[in-house]
Length: 127
Image 1 (tube, helix red, strand yellow):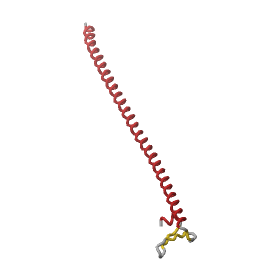
Image 2 (cartoon, rainbow, N blue to C red; image 1 turned 135 degrees about the horizontal axis):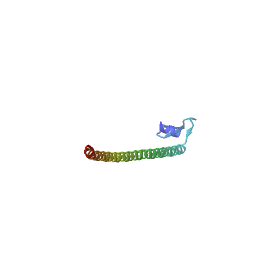
Image 3 (tube, helix red, strand yellow; image 1 turned 180 degrees about the horizontal axis):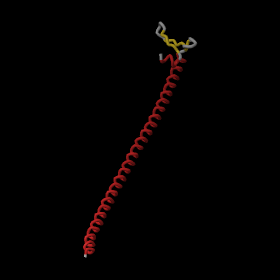
């Protein structure tokens, strides 16, 4: 049982109702006060081990939380960068489109200007 493991003692109940304690390895009789000391020290040791395990678990949990928070921060930063790049790309496309419209307008104006000059120069040549 668990108590036998931690105290290294076996407990027997005698016919008169008293408990007797025996060391598992040596099979020697153990006084009740000695068994009590073994029992209390085993309980304290078990508590200490459990406390250490809890502390380790909490540290791992904190580490895991900080890793998770860092991953979330990176995802948010990545999303912000992508949004900024998309916005810059959109602004570039708008500027490019405006420039194309301006170039087309300039080309039309130049073409119209050439057409207006062209008939006048033809009529002056024919005279």
